[in-house]
Image 1 (cartoon, rainbow, N blue to C red):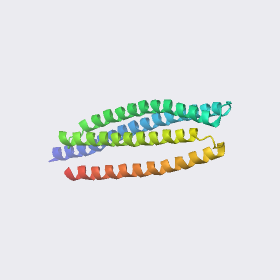
Image 2: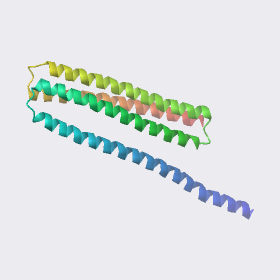
Image 3: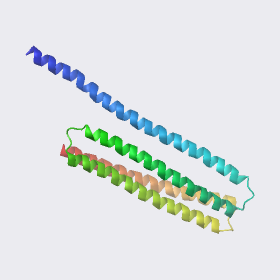
Image 4: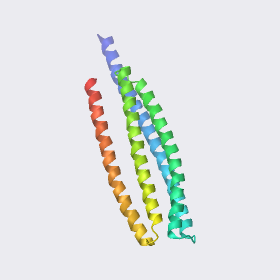
Length: 190
């Protein structure tokens, strides 16, 4: 009787620490990802600021500046795609490692989780590509209109940016709801 009680007590003391260690490992991974993204964005922001400053001091017409900015954005977009793909692959590798340790899940459930995450990423890529195409078409439209002055261009860009912010917010909310319903569905199966 005492032996059983001691074993149960030892398990009770060890189990929470292993769960805690697992949560801390995931937290550290997510924090590392956030730092990578933050550093990358800061670097891009600084590069963009330097490019705009250089462009502002040039003797180009507003339309030529718009074309140069569009070219710069295309180059930056290629870098963004590569970076996001790298981050996604790291996330998927981490998820696969975490799912391997989940004994309650069947192989089919693990596969469904991975497929859901991949589908979410593909939806995000589609949304991102659609926004990119809208941005490029908008920049083309601005660069082809010689009647616009700096202030009008700035105002149109601000309006366009606000429109895109709203679309992004709606898209993120939709994905959040899909994730929540998927989690609830998975919990119901356990």
